[in-house]
Image (cartoon, rainbow, N blue to C red; front, side, top):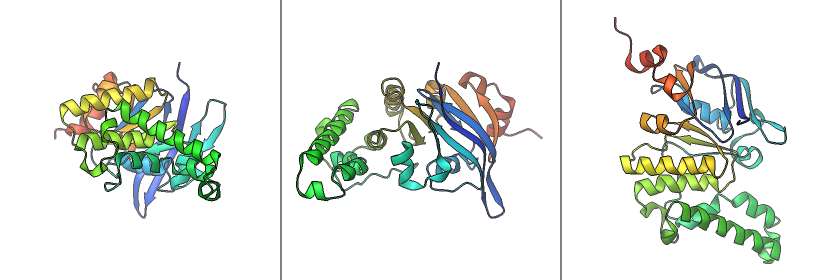
Length: 265
């Protein structure tokens, strides 16, 4: 049975007089895919922005639970420290690759923190010492490993911006995986994908969950993706949780149906 990986308790995010997230409580388990769905403007991306340090919540607690019974408060970290200290990685709705850098270089950038530590913040790297060279070699091998998984090894030296759209989506996901996250947050990874690409995405996410034992938090509008791979679903509407349960029960919920389709007068 999977252990709890993430707990969100009474999360509230206000922007002036607007309450974007209203007293939200949910949890996600390790080695599972938890999807957060809801109509446009429901507050899904705001939740991600709180979890990954882009926003400081107005109220509430966000905690990551590790295997050694250690609990990390995500509230105390901001931006890149979330990825480095808490091992939470994310992607965005709009692709944010370094388009003029090579495919391989994009993956090496994701490992910048580890490389900087190994370099002694430049001195070992400048002296080309073994400690840094070994870590650099490991970073390249890890990058090639992930490129092999998504079938892009032959394009390692090509500019990332020259890849087809679907391949750019997958590259962004494996770039996040190069940070060795415990929790991977994906914001609409299937947006703009055709059915074949969506199927390939599903296989990649299942591989990450099962083989890499990484918990995934997914925001997605493509219900074929949500229902096909999710273990647990949380539904938001106007910043409030209106349902939480299995994918099968989600489709039967009166509250969910009304949120998406409206209520007849």
